[in-house]
Length: 395
Ligand code: LCS
Image 1 (cartoon, rainbow, N blue to C red):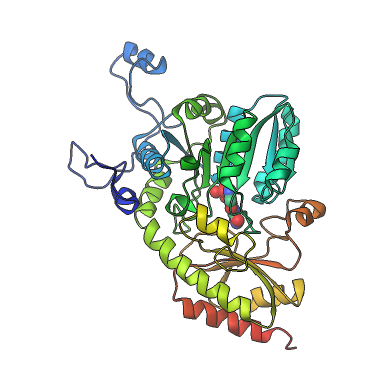
Image 2 (image 1 turned 90 degrees about the horizontal axis):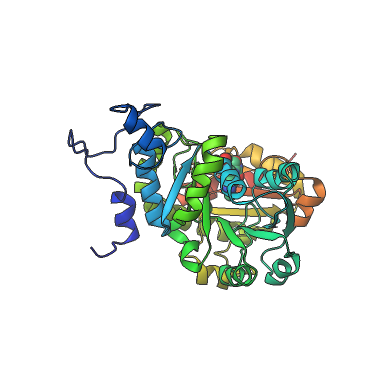
């Protein structure tokens, strides 16, 4: 059969009517374990000689449906659905690395990814260098003989800087590095890094994939060979698997992913343009703006600019604090990719685990405010921000 368009596959892939009841929707197989017909069958399943479920930490039909859907959307051979985005990041990286290995990572990455690499990796003899991965020369300069992995976030949380994926892949191939990218901000709707030669994609499924702010989850997509290693090591033994119920929530969320991304992106473009011309605003970071230093790269490697932006106010941190506390529609909360517009302060919230010098190095300045634009009416989001900005400077 021809490969269908991404909107069709978001609705249909991975799901078939139940052969027993005809139920159109994937059931939530809310079970911890699966019954064997006899001892030999149990032994065959454990030995991998017979297909079939054993125990939900090792696989479950609702998880499996989500994994098939995500593998299809990202264009990978296989996927693993995990309990959180951090379970995806830690299982994927640690499952493929061993003591003595070194990782080159984007310096602007989600705060807990940064602390996993900086604080925990050394405990297991893993080294890391954080560099500005928007500059391929910095990547090249950081590669050592023991480097095994290049870890990227593009666009990065919260600075919205991009990595040139083609150049990064070429460098990684020359040096025999495994490439991993966090595709949370773009989703497969707007960016499919595996098509560009990246080895593994990770996601916080908590964000756009789930899309409704009601489930914490993660996804890893890549080759069957890499994913079998991860499934047989870190996933099995650290145990960060998704629950059947959360897998089902993500399956439902993905059906509307394209609709949500289109609306969120159109809102975000308007909000970015509004903020950019506002006299109180110093600078807006959004790849959809023509003055974003990587606007052309964004057009080349992404199918849309997404719903995340950050900005600095002329009044710095105190102005940002006043704005965040005065908004009525935009909600003061971390997380992102929800239906609702969320606003937060990276330096004291999502990226507070970074030391001050690491924050500065990554461009996470005290005055930076991050906005995750939702599906509300764009004019209402802008009016809320406009009202809040008017209050700055007033006693
Ligand atoms: N990757 C990215 C790019 C993220 O933004 C996050 C969470 C994670 C991975 C981890 O995913 P989780 O374990 O939370 O599902 N980012 C958050 C944020 O910016 N605000 O709150 C959480």
